[in-house]
Image (cartoon, rainbow, N blue to C red; front, side):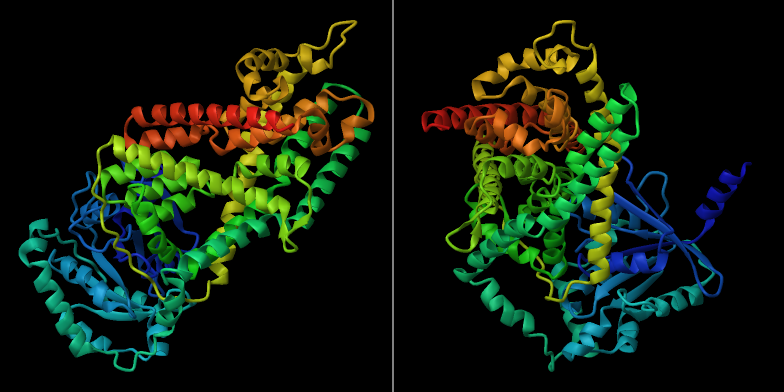
Length: 629
């Protein structure tokens, strides 16, 4: 047996500890605190639900495997996430045994909701530890929890933890050490859960709380006071609209300085390389392919990070579930529930996590419709195209004395995506004959200041994903596009730029027949092709195409003035309209295929989005021409 096989066998023999609990109880923070970097993320077999597994060793030298199960409110599963948690705990997953010990993490400030899951798991007869998390927050609010009495009433160890602080996991680790060695026991049948009714379970929860918890001095009314304004029927939507508007204004205003710095650095590096290399294919590849193409996309990193920063802050402080609540009535008008808000908001970053987040929607029809409209949310990959065209054609000036005109245009493009998504959802829900809406049930967590460590990690991960795409997919496509744009060279006596005679030029002129009615020239048609793999590649593609089609000093000019002088305003507006509805990148269609387990829906998605994009672009172009654009 090899060393790798021995290591894998040793890990498999370690006791399996499963972490589970309600959403927002701090379970994943505890998992990260215990495992650190010793964790791996994959998907459960047959589904795209995330599986996080790690290892840790206690101070006593005992080694454990730790599994972070998806959040669940009950083992009477209603969503794919809850089904996975139920099956893992009950040992029903093929090739997996039930955990040796279950650590049920509960929010000390919300035991009334959390204890139901604890009582359900207890009926399965597995060794258990209840982890009383966020005890520091409970003490600040004046909530007194008697952990010893809770342990006595529940018949299991109860430990206090603060997962967001170093050392906050110490009591749990000591308890697991005290339970060593573990003797694996098979879980009772799931029918044991239903042996007690939900009403009796809630009655038992109230009895335990009356004995072990004193909350008469609860000072946690700050959240209620804030919600008096945030959830107000009139003020709430206004606050949400103002927040979203400020986000899009900041994307342009705050990002200008770092974008200029990146652009200047990439340009200087390209000039430096070009000045120290002889004329030839390699120089053209590096300067015209790599630096012109990749650099044109890299410059938009600050805008993407600013957008993610606001999304992460709103999520971490507890506002996003309230936004879902506020939008439930509006979304109900098109046949969706407010629960679809979070997947759709995630799609502003990228449609892929938004589509995967839709699995928490219980109603199958609502889930399919949410998946189908998620790509209409303006993902961050569109942002480079929007920023390029807006900067080239929309003046950078203030309007009404306070607002940036470019930011207003960007806001309108995002708003157009939202309106179109709602319209498509309305049509789909009626075509599916689903007239009855599901009521929205959401847990509204208490407000708290965002954790800077979580924000930093989140922004780091987003930057890493973007830079990885720049260094792999986008770089590969830019090099491929450079080759297609460079070969074969122009013949003797050529009257057009060299790219006109290349393979890319031929392809662009062939596509121009289809796209000329909506105002696209052959250069834009070339950029649309690699954009099928990654939308932001279109900017780099335009940079490569136009750089290669210029001569002399024009080669060093930025892309913005080049397209400003080459396109009409009608063409620019048409391209913006195209990208509001642009057909999805291939990776998104692949995820839709996995999530729906059918080719029907990705084909429907690609088809309807192409029709929408072409129709909207045609109307925009013709109207702009009629108005003198």
